[in-house]
Structures are given as C-alpha cells and as structure tokens.
Image (cartoon, rainbow, N blue to C red):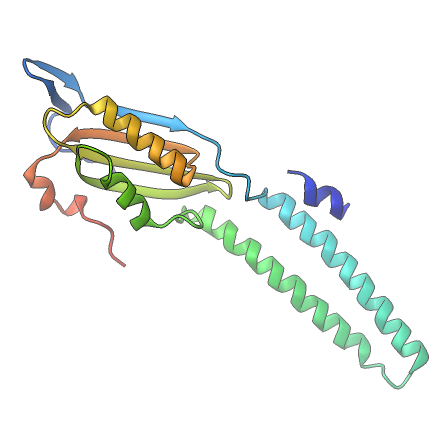
Length: 202
C-alpha cells in the first residue's frame, strides 16, 4: 500500500483602459492569460497524507514488535513499550506538521514554495520596454500549481503583444507558473506615487 501511494502521482488601473499603440490609432490595453504545467516536484497532498498514515501504522507495528521482543527476553525492561510508542509518535507528528504547513499555505493563499517575490519582480523588469510593474500577486492554488498576476507599465510606442509574449515566456521558463495573467498598460508618472503601485511591506 505504501509503495502504491508513494509512486502515484482588489483591481485598479490607470487611465481609461486604452493605450496608444501606434500613432493615429487606439488599441485596448493588452491582456494575457497563460497556463503551463508546474514541474513535477510536488505530489498530491491527500496522497502524501495517506502515505504518511500507512507508514505511521507500519512503524507503530514495528515498535510494538520491538518492545514485545525486549520485554519477552528482559521482563524488567517494560519501559521499552512507552519509549517505542513515544519515539514513533514523535516521528508521525513531525511528518504530519509538514503536511499541515503546506495545507495552510494553500488555504491562506500564501506565496508558492520556492518562488521569491523579488526574483519574479527582477525577471519582469528585465523585459524589454518595461519601465515598471505593480499589482504583482503570487499564490499557490495547489502544491503543484502556482499562479501569478501582474500589471506591466511599458514605454510609449512599445509593442504590447511583444512585451506580453516575452514576459509570459520568461515566467514559464524560470518559474513554471501554472497560470499567468498579465495586463500591459502605458507607463505614467503618477504610478511612481500611487500607493497601490508600491511593493508590499512586511
């Protein structure tokens, strides 16, 4: 059974929503949405919990056998029974805590494990023609599915679709996000002073 389980597998914006793409014409702000498969380094939480439960039962059975053998040959060592029970209980508790931590990360929409806010920000700002970014949100939908949404402010005259494509490819390549939502808009000076456009503070 253990072998089988182990191997299974608030919106805001600047401007009217339109941006100048080419001289003499107006085009809606570019908006991109992409899906990708995150790397298979994470397993299903329910399967992990079931696997740990099976392993815990196995270890407790081994502990009972070890304690029984010790007490059979050395009856004066009856303390072996509670000692074995305590040791294996600590092991099961420790492994359960790791699962609970991952579950709470998902329930509270915490940042995905192994993905740093500043790292994602640096990658986005490295995209050609991007002057600034804001409203960057990272959260975990499941252990294997991380999501990102962001607003990119680009230079006037820049090709919004090219920026959108480059940013999406970089996020997929470097972080493997399951879902990527990017809104591209023209950069304006008021963004530098907008409280909603600042990075989150601890």
